[in-house]
Structures are given as C-alpha cells and as structure tokens.
Length: 230
Image (cartoon, rainbow, N blue to C red):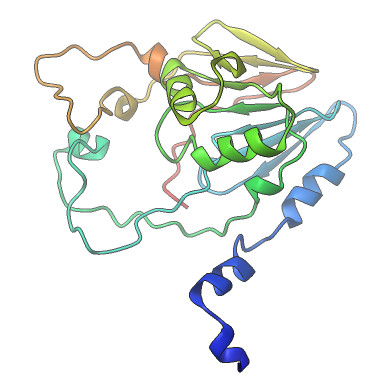
C-alpha cells in the first residue's frame, strides 16, 4: 500500500496532537526553581502551572478542550450562562486559538489539581483522568463544592477531593493554597439545561467559585482567569 493510501484522519491526529508533544512536560520536570522564586507556565486559555522552589507542582484551571467547532447549530445551547446573562441566543464564535502545549497524559509529577469554578474552560475531565491513571494515588483535587461534585461524578474518589470555601487554607508540601471570596456572575447563573432560574434564589457564590492565591515562600494571586477561549 502506498504511503498516501495508508494515512487516515486518525493517524494524522495521533501523529500531530498535542502539537507540542511532551516538550513542555519535560521542561517543567527539568526546571530547577531558584530559592525565593517560583516558576509559572501559561497552559493556554485559563490554565496555569506553578512550581515552587521545593519542587511542588500544581495546575490551576487546566483545560484541554476546544471552543466551538462547527456552524451546525447557530444558537447557544439552552441554559448557556452567556444566554442567561446577556439575553442573547446566537452562537458565540469563541474558538480555541492556542495549541495544546501540555499533554495531560504525559504528566507524571503533580502534587495538586486546582479549579476555581466549574465552567468547562476551568475544569477538565481529561486532566482528571490523566492524573488518576498516571500519577500518585494521593494527589488531591481542590476546589469549590461545584467542582468537587463534578470530579466525583467523573469518578474521582471522594477522599481525593477537598472542598474549599473562602477562609480555608490547604497546605501542599511547601506551599499553602488560600481560598478567598470570588465574584463571578456567570458562575452564579450557570444551571443545568433542564433547571429553571425564574423564582428561585441562586445558591451561594462560595459553593460555586473561589479565588485561590498560592503562598509560601512566594505569593501569587491565582484567581478566576477571565480570558476568552484561547
């Protein structure tokens, strides 16, 4: 069989994606953080990877999905948070524009998975699956109640999950994760498609979203990144 006949869409995808392969995974593993400093990598969209001088690794809001992929349905899905917030129905052209720079299934060294709230571009089932399958069996998943509910629903054991609300502090090796008040209007009005908001008081913000500054020996305010899908 000729080469062009043996190549398929599936073989192309497997040979091309993620576009950066394990390059950034290797870079993070090899990084030696100088005393009194920290290292940070932007993972695209809302995702951040932080590494402390003690070698503690945490990822925050790491998303491995895509934005819109087709014009097939010209309308937002019923109940979409932007539809609820702005009163619009036409599909937003929020496409992913950055490559997949980190392979979640090549992650080996990670000490905590963090999510600030439960929107799809801040919490990802592929990240959860990769960490559960390939990393230490005591890596915690840390976030507000709605995020923990998602993780447990995906199959992450309840004992691996830590619910945080403003005022809580979680220590992970040489760093501390501080949960602070958040204000994310879209998080408050995000509901399942079959759930109606009319006449119902929204639940508390503390269950839905938190800011997660990371401290010791440095302090960096990892909040709810409000970038467009990138």
